[in-house]
Image (cartoon, helix red, strand yellow):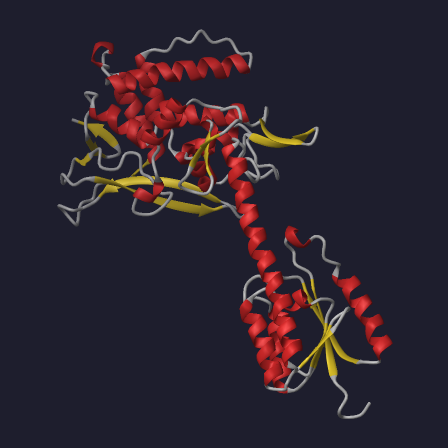
Length: 419
């Protein structure tokens, strides 16, 4: 080989996107171009390939390195299957033409033709790559148009959310209810809307119910909030975000339940730090100094790598920095509250209308849940039983409303409530 022979880099590219399924595989491109090189007796110094879209400029690492090496003089020719393998955007096309203008790139050889540093060749190269860009742009417009049409027909594009399944029957695609997950999701909304469950409490309940994702993993707290805020479950959906469409899929819940959930849902982002909600914060006073009672979280690492969460309440010491009042664990605080409630006469157990409505919904949910599990339950529950339930398992909002309306002592001393 003499010094004047062009030193080619064989470049092959296959986009990972579905819009280029018709393009030959990388192995096929390399095989065909090797045959071409042998036929035309050209020297391939190196073979480089990548799986990456060429829609955007400067996004392909292998192609960028190829351009840098051409500038350094490592190669002065490119052999590739088709011009659109090199560029489908104006930025990369401009860099290729600039290298030809600078005489650092002498030839681009494709399966059907060659391009040299000649005005007509460069013009044709630019037309072919621009045509590839035009096809890309039109394809994107057509895809968006198809998505809008599908939305207007009532079918949400993409994978259906948990509680639903995508189905193809007789060539027609639709979305159906997942019989295993939908009942649990329905009850999750009921608990958030009418049983004062926070997002964290809903997650804990769903974990106990055995709810998992399609991959068999437990649902995360962020997924719970996304689920409870998703209008898809009452028959509507956003696509793209901000535009609401009416779906043809069967709703799992009613619009009223969804709206009640939004009004009752405790959003952790409204708190000082996400995920740490102290149910009894600000409800009681320190007996010794009169300061407020605040919550604090402690985590103990377990042998299996997990953590056990403990919540404690103690005096804020805002009025007396040397206050000696002892802390109390949340579980002990709840037990102390229940003992105090047991001493309140029935006629003084008056709850607000909101809690009464919530109690009726609680009866309905428990009745339905027990019906599904075949347990016997008559649907009756007393105000005292419901009061105990709210103190044990209610959300911060429900506990606050209940405690503020009951004749309870509001001062803590030696880990007990006193007047």
